[in-house]
Length: 248
Image (cartoon, rainbow, N blue to C red; front, side, top):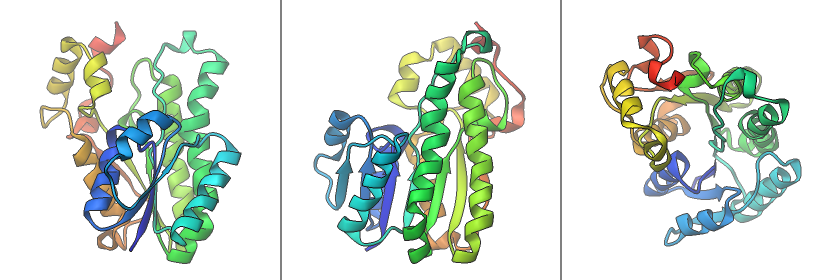
């Protein structure tokens, strides 16, 4: 049985990806710093290891990998999904706010990837880093978030270049607007309409649509795919920069 490790697994894309892996017969180590939400998410799921840890803390990362190795004895896929979304104007983004975003969105991906590397090399496995359409195209209020995700995209290519000789594949998925509970709670109807107008497919994506691409990239079906940055965005990247509704 193959083993995946998914960070940010308590909700959204991380939880959807976890369930897709399980449906394909994998076992999954679910990691999230929100222990209560993670426990609720894992309730009723078989073949999962629940780890309430913070990927931005080096000691937690070491503990995660140690526990996964003890539990499964292998790691075939790492999904670096944990992230924080903090939006605001450049002039109002102080260094503490900047670091809060970077610690999880970029540092966490680096720490988890580096710690997982020995197990991934042993399995000739795969990693998928979750960035964002905000790393591919500039937009308003995303100086820290967008920059962190752009960093994830380049880190992905560095990892693919260095780890390819060990048989490890590393790719990056950039979700566009996704119909999560959080997004629907904070997006006004004006913003929803603006996204629908700007996205060629005319709608938000679903968590499963993102998860399907992630699990594909971790599978043997993607055995010759590495170093790629793949937008799963309904064509949003092709349509220009920014939305007037988000500037207000």
